[in-house]
Length: 102
Image 1 (cartoon, one colour):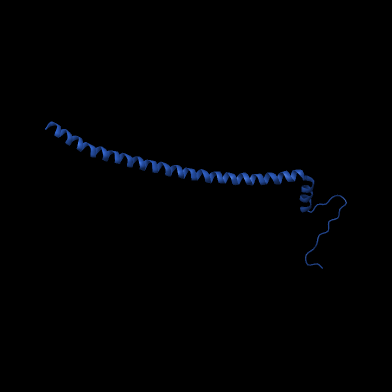
Image 2: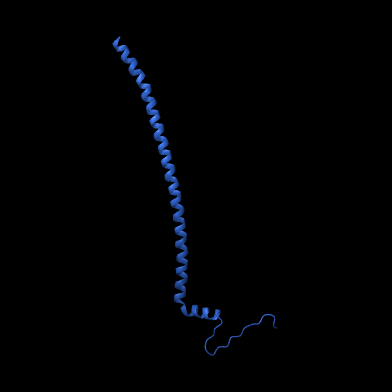
């Protein structure tokens, strides 16, 4: 009869082990899902930050190109700026149109 009682004890232990293993796997699965969700959120934030930085880089490149163009054509740029202020070269006469006079 001693063997018979040992079989009952081991038979009772197995369902507990299986139940504990199922609980452990469930906890681990929940942990993995939480970690993956956090990583996905962080990845999305970093992608948004990278996109913003790319936009600023593109804007700075356009500004650099504009400044390079002005530097390469500085005489033309200076003349445009002077003319916008209504100035003329020595000996030039500036004619301004008066609105409503015909």
